[in-house]
Image 1 (cartoon, rainbow over the protein chains, first blue to last red):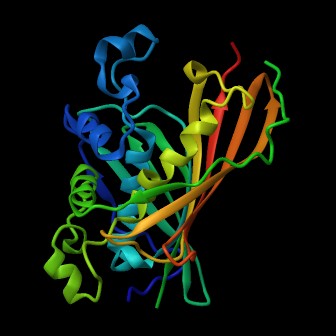
Image 2 (cartoon, helix red, strand yellow; image 1 turned 135 degrees about the horizontal axis):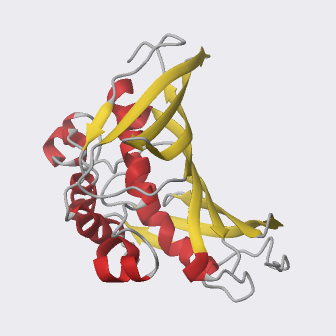
Length: 130
Length: 146
């Protein structure tokens, strides 16, 4: 079981979605909204191009927590806000900081960004701590 | 925009989702999971699970078929073209594994209008074959003013 200290910065998670990522995630998740998989459609509704699924980006925040905490059974809850648009072929970084540890549960604040764009904000995870 | 709040409290028919091993692996690969618990049945069994373990965020896969009817319900009144997924909360009771059937029920939790935008929250509860809760969610949508 992982040990967490308040104020501790957890390891960053970095991942670069390749140009077909949204197609694979659409198939895996069942979310075929064309803004994620059809370049022409995405531009026609005023987007810069196909954008990432917010829930894929949230899954990266979740993965940073389960990897730090030692497994999928350690994540108790996760809440996030989606704001800026995520794009393909640009590195995404998840940063996580322990806010509190109480009664065997660590509360962790996190966000996911690409460059200066924060695409998952105000994430709060509760994970099993030592 | 103005919103109609009569649908608050409305609950949709439960939806049952059968978790498949290859679906878990497909999802795990798409989100970049490398933990063998999600990919290798032998590793999962060695850790005490009956089959591969769904990553926590797989919850959105088994919950979304239950949420979708609410998004398109005329009584709720979401203009899908103007909708954005603004927030998501999930709470897990335990990991679920391939071979399980998960039954999910969605309720319209809140409808509000602020600053010309509509706010729609859906409360989602997923239970295992014994009726025990495995995951609860709050799916939050914003509809921009047209």
